[in-house]
Length: 540
Image (cartoon, rainbow, N blue to C red; front, top):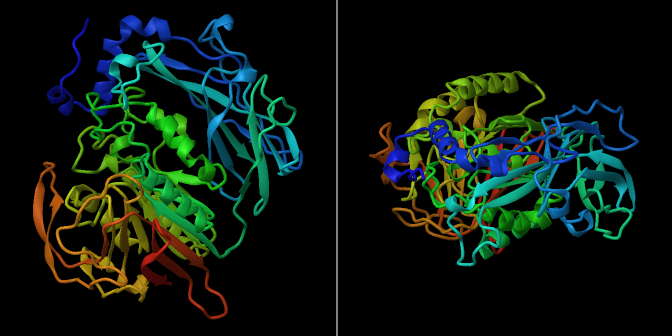
């Protein structure tokens, strides 16, 4: 048997090199897992891992403007013999979550999980919870992880220890009507949510309206699975957001987070994560970015095969994307590409992501219908928390572009705290912005917020907290920044305006300019008890 890779060996290999090593290691057992699923999906076999994704654009209901062509996919042989597969009526869907496509006014993706292979999965959508339309085809994929590579989160052994198989289903739906509330339910052969014997409740979602509406969005990162994570997800729901931005490090199934195949990993943590958030994410679109804990070498050369099966990215197979909602453009980035802290995916896009970012920023700033640009990604440009602090790679690659194109707000995770800077340009403070103040971003630059305290263990600051109803401490102090060698270079910090060591999320109220009033982003930090710990208004 080929020996396993040591941590020292893994530290010197890229994500693609680790994936190739894994393919060679598992070649002997690959035939046991090779295959596909009947009816709805394609499985790409390799490295002991089966993975397939779908991007069929289909009509939402009989009232849709037109019925697009559904791309055909090759059908592979059954993964399991028919006799070994459970009947469809006994396979119950779980872990439903939705996200917007590239156009939130007309596109939505529905993703869910089933505990076993099913045939002909689908979504039914209607304008009321009692009136569903026709079946909309979805596609099934499977992620198979050899049990020998799993570090169980508990001591209970698997019944079938050869591999953990997880079945995900995606439906990408287009031609919806703007500003409409729809209801959906999911099913497959033998399990029809509209006809029984399983009548499941319909889940609502609402497409983005045209024009420039008032609305709220929420954001956090570094959630994991815990009672605090549930509390923060409940707080999301209490804000009644149009959608939620997740700034990476979602489940922590990959506990090590360095993108190495020697990391402690239990894919079943994803099951717990999706069930934990289903009450909220099944109706509120969650728009995630990848963090360092989403780098999983088992499934693809870039490490993102798993997250792409579990979440339908607006641009299929790409970890960065952009969408517009009203007068705000949102840009989601993959900071694993530029961070100095981790080597596994550093430079994997070969500069393509940064070039894409440049074009996106230029296009959004040239669009007169766009007032604000919000960028979000995982590793921090500016943070003073002890664990990770700031990242020099992010600063070198992207903050000059944020300055050039007057980005209004940058949201990060990674450090498990809440922290907000004064407005910055060229890394320097342009004006003081205490809690409750108003700043003009065109004049003063970009505000950076770290919202990484959404459920996982909390970090600490090197100095005292400073937030609403607490001490106001903005004197310069020592912190550090990751350098090109991955080490820590000390720096003197004078931009850390608000620090809160506690579980919290960021809620942003978007108010377009009307009747002589400037357009506004009203930032509110809300802790897990619903108390407001920070507030700032950004105007244009």
